[in-house]
Image (cartoon, rainbow, N blue to C red):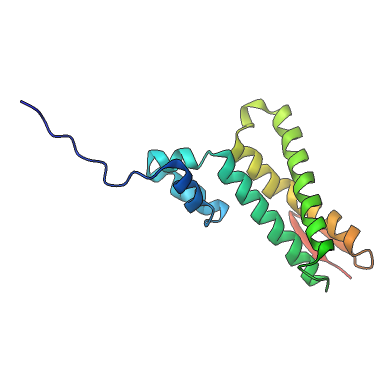
Length: 145
């Protein structure tokens, strides 16, 4: 006598789940991750978090450039985004090396976004816009010109 097993009605490949997660904000990934095993795995994925960090850094740098009346989309803005991404990655890797139990992709991403990004954004934008007074205070970036 055979017993019927319930069929898994929704089974998406990991790359599809990862692509879906790219449309969420970082907090949305944390909210969605506990809903299913595949989603939990995606919520820990380096590819998902690398994409979210890149998107968050890009938006932050370009938004601050726009406030400083610089172009959001030109060679200087693109270089500023690359510079900020590289600095965020370096800082989060140094932090993870000091805290190996917090070295997951998710933890490094949260460090890059929540701790490293504001002062790095201020520094990078100050390099691009030396005529503006840009500061980082309480994890936010302000144009005090």
